[in-house]
Image 1 (cartoon, rainbow, N blue to C red):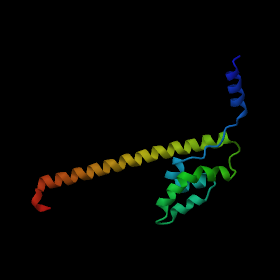
Image 2 (cartoon, rainbow, N blue to C red):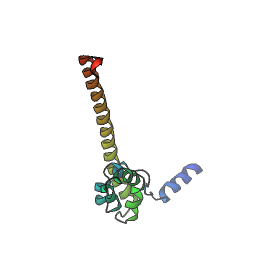
Image 3 (cartoon, rainbow, N blue to C red):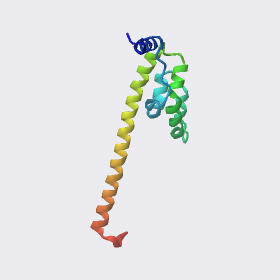
Image 4 (tube, one colour):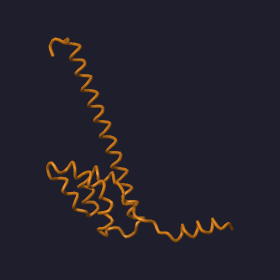
Length: 124
């Protein structure tokens, strides 16, 4: 057996999986719902008027860390699997929101163009 293969096998079997503490789309998009579901209650601050928009970004950036630190998950594997599901759902929701916003803007521009063309430019 090659020495590199032995080292790689030993390294892969002895290094446990670590929790992934980066950006979480689920915490960003579903902030307070994600917080209650993960027994993290700081995301409830997103319900405060004028704070919620900024707090959503804080939740996306810090959510995984908060969820891991609360001790609800027994293993990093369980944590990563659960947060991966939340993140996937959040990313899908984000893409849908962006697509709907773009469609709304395009339809609004189309209606403006139709109104201008049907009434002429002198009625603006």
